[in-house]
Length: 592
Image (tube, rainbow, N blue to C red):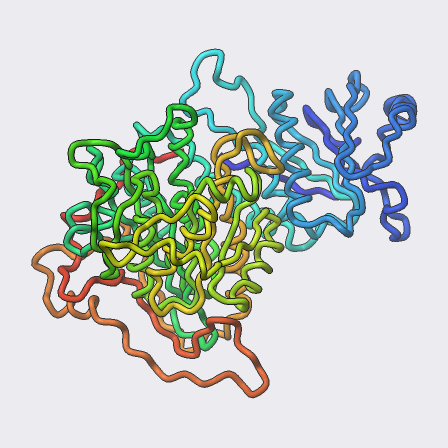
C-alpha cells in the first residue's frame, strides 16, 4: 500500500509522530530569504537546550551525510529526533534528495514507527517529487514470505512533510507523481525478488498481464508454440531445457491522435527467471542470486506501469523475453548452431551466456517496429561488474548524439551509469567457423563483445542503447535509495528519457476520439477471425505526410516527422498471427 503523505507549512517541532527526521543545510548555506525559518526552530527550547549542547559537542554543521540522533524524552510529540546533514541545498541532485528521504523512511521502519514527521529546509519545497520517491522506495521491504517472528510487527504508513516555506499550489500533483513513479520501481523490485519456483516464465507473463489489465495497457503474450511459429529459435534454444517453457511479452502505449514531433521508443528486457548456466553449469556459490537474472524484464514491467498512468505524448513499447536456463536432456549444447529470428545463424559456445541469445530474438522482433530509439537492458555480463563494481551499470550507444541524449537522462535520474566503448576490433572475437557468428568472445572485454553481438540484431535501427545492469540490479547491501535485493535500477533513467521526449513532442493535432477502456488486456486474435483483419494487423501502417519542422528548429535525435502507429507486434513474413491459444490467461492472484 502507498504511504499516506501530507504536506504542510509548519515547523516539525509542532507536529505529532513516532519519529521526526529533519534535513539540515550546511552552516552558511542556509536560505537568504527574509524571515526564513529553520526546520530546527522550536526543538532546542522544547528540549531545554539539550539539542544546542549536543550539536556543539558533536560538531554537527549540517555537512552532507552527517547524522545525529537523540531521544526526546517526551518533550516533543515524537519519541526520537534524527538530524541529517544535507550540505548545500542548491547543489543537491535528484539522487541526493531521494537518498535523504529514503534514509528517513528506513529509520522509521527500523524504529517500528508508523508515523514519520519529515522536516525540509527552504529550497526543497519544489523538490517534492524526489522526496516522495525516496520515501516510498526507502520504505520498501520484501516480506511476502515471512511469518511469525520474522514478519515485521509494524511498518511506516503515514508521513507528514513539514515545509518552512509555503506549500506549493501543485504539491498534491507532485506527491501523486512521486508515488506513481515509486510504485513502478517497487513493482520491478517485487518481481525481481520473487523466488524462481514462483516466478517462472509463464507466471511472469501472467503477472505482466495482471499489471496491464489494471493499468488499461495493451499487451500481447506469445507462448512457446507461438515463439516456434514466429521463428524465435534462439529464445526456444535457451528455454527448451526447462519444464517451464519460454514466452515473450509486448506492451504498447500509443497516444491518440497525431503529433509532428512524437517519437517511438522501444524498451527491451532480458527475463531469465532462473539461470543455472544450463549444461555449462554455474558453481553453487552465488547461484541463488540468479533469480534476479530477469531484472531487465522486471524493469520493463515497472516502467510500463508508470507509462500507462502518466500517459506521455510518446509511443512507448515494452518488450521482454522470458526463459529458464536449465540443464536437461533437451537442453541446448555448446557446439550447437541455431538460426535466429533475424535470419543469422549462431554457434553456441557457452550455455551460461544465454541472456544475449534471448535478447537477440527480442531485438530482432523490436526492430520491425521501426523505433526512433531502441534500448535494451539486461543483467548480462560479470565482466561489466568487474569493470564498474556493484553500484554502477555500463551502457553502450550506437552514436554520439544518442549517447548525449541518454547521458542527460542518466544525470537527470541520479542513477549511476557509465558509458562504455564499442571497440570494433573486438568484433573479430565473434567470428565462427561453422555459423554466421558465435555468441561469445574472449574473456577480456566480455561486456564489449556482448554488446557487439547484440548490435548484430538491431538491423537498420540508427539509435540504440544497450545497458548492462548486472551490478546494481541486485544489491548486496543498502545503497542510497536502493534496498538489498532487487533494486529496479534503470527504471528512473528510462522514465526520464521518455518524459523528456514527451515534453519535446509537438502539440497534438488531428486528435482521434479516445478508444473505450477495455475490460481485459488486449491479446492476439483468435482462430477464425476474419482474414482481412489479420492481414491488416500484419501489414505495416501506411505513412502519412506531416509538415517538416520550421526552419531553424532542430528536431531531437530520432524524432519522427511522420506520425506512425504500430501497436501490434511484428510478425515474420508469412508467419501466422498469434492466437488466443498462444496467449496466457492472467493470474488470479496479484503479485506484490
